[in-house]
Image (cartoon, rainbow, N blue to C red; front, side, top):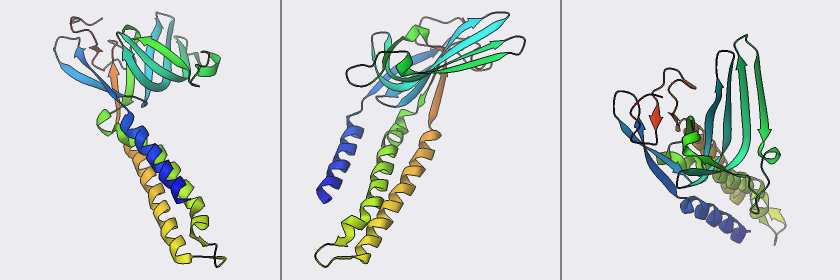
Length: 222
């Protein structure tokens, strides 16, 4: 049992430290030149927004939800979870649909739904702050391990030789796993407030937001 617990912890730690971070500058495209760095860590959750139609009668947009995998050239790679399409008509009619990745993309050999997105097709990007991204990456593993230990505590603490439960040992394991669950939930809260947003369109989705660009030469608002 102890070997199994150690193996789980080693696998979780190995996954966390193996993740890499992609960094790229983005530039303000209004009258005030400014630069900041977008940092995307492999595996973190992200959403990509694209304004498809914007005219006098209809505004239609699409959001891609998934996990960041990397960037090759000018193409972002992600493991897609779902697509949300929203259509808003000027008469007030609103139509929204959610499409699971399995209905949109053929499953890859590694059991993921891979999708490539050109950086030029990104109008909106939301992601976790890389400086605390490890919190988001680790929270599920802390919770999983703690919940596993909570249920395993009676078996770990059982004295099989004397056929009775070692209550002192059980209390220590139960207390430790409870603290772990509390820590995991706290990490989820911290991960939630670390979300970052970058808008690459001059008026969508937030008309008041400052637009940015991956292209340094773009100095005029689109």
